[in-house]
Image 1 (tube, rainbow, N blue to C red):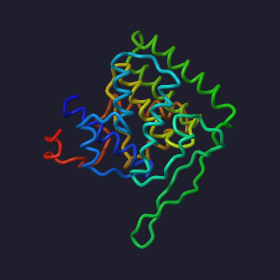
Image 2 (cartoon, one colour; image 1 turned 90 degrees about the vertical axis):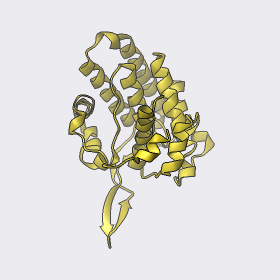
Image 3 (cartoon, rainbow, N blue to C red; image 1 turned 135 degrees about the vertical axis):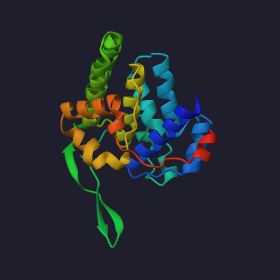
Length: 243
């Protein structure tokens, strides 16, 4: 990988984690990306990148491995440690899809932990829903070379929406789903984009209202990236050089 792509991965991981209120040490993450670490969130991204480059079809084991790699290290970043039985395995419990909204108390940001959007499908439906999810993407991968760039972006958007609706894991669904979006866009020969944390409340989360909303979210980010405001500073020039 060249320095530009390493910088992209650094930003992608950092922002995806921040959406879940998980911080990264800037230097530590930079060193892991520079070394092309094959574990953790970095390993998950590189695993997805390699499969996309080889045009390898998606399967359930691939998705489970992405979640296992991402969630297996999150306790090292200060997040809750995930039990081994929940790494790389579909959930066996009910989960709610929630959004944490900030409010201010004395100038300090505090997060509300109980804003429930909807209930995810019951655990006994997850296996069959994921089987269909993977089958639909595999069918799209056969068609992708013959579809327009916009249609391929729309298929990636719908897959992202559907994956988060299923919420197949106890934890890591958002981060895993964003890696899958990266994988699908690369498979289609499209430029992947960063899911900026600073925009999650006004454009990313609202995109989950419908598949059409998510299609529009992906359309703008893939084809009109100049309209998207990310962070002014992500990594310094000196740090980038060290890649």
